[in-house]
Length: 84
Image: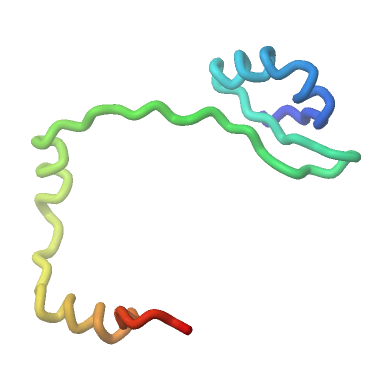
């Protein structure tokens, strides 16, 4: 559940807000009753071993690199000339 927090509360209670973020709480920051931003805790990273990654992609289809390159060239503008 996202807790609403006024701009003034954020300014005056920043230490409390930071500790709440450490605990995983999320805030909607408001100014004059209107939401202007969201404060969310950063997700911690978790290590995934190479074996797990290889197993996850074991059933994935093989990439045809020639077709892939043609698709990239067809859909993406890769002109290195500066715009101007």
